[in-house]
Image (cartoon, rainbow, N blue to C red; front, side, top):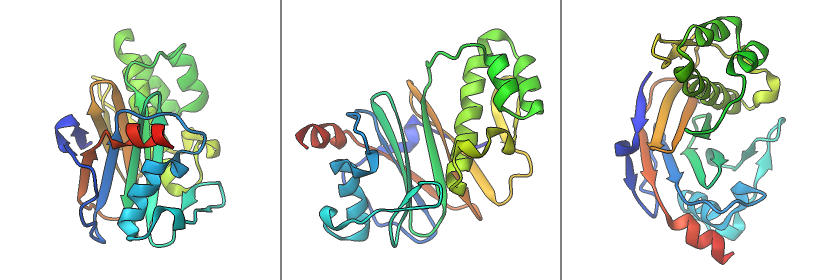
Length: 219
């Protein structure tokens, strides 16, 4: 599975032109938690810039399972701790997930048996104990990204989306994954994530910004 590591995330403040056949990823390493992340000033400003409209004119709609959407723009976001990840495209359905790379996970084997596909649970159990937690988190981010891209969310069942694990605990790919494509993310040393999107392979450009910290605090 392709990995976008920290070196792929280029510093930026405003978005460059977004082609119809590409995806932009934005990583905000300094995020002040807010009740509705899509409504945060910095997020609204970024989305509005893609649509060339004023941020206050954005009108969010909700899909059947609550996924926020905008006319003329596909987007999805995920936040954990003090960081946020945002994926944007013109027409490509996508989903993203972000997790702390050091997040403690209790009873990995038990959680995997309960929530993951049987083959994934078995693959996790076969790994050395020191590798199980990061492998579990990698699997989780990939699964959640796909389910969010589909619009259903994790409540529809994490076991519905199955991935292969290598003997080193790395995610190899998705079983029967069409029409989904999944990329692993490591925007910095403290976070891991994934992006999933529907359709053919397209360019994914990644950016990192710190603007959200100041803008969120001023709201």
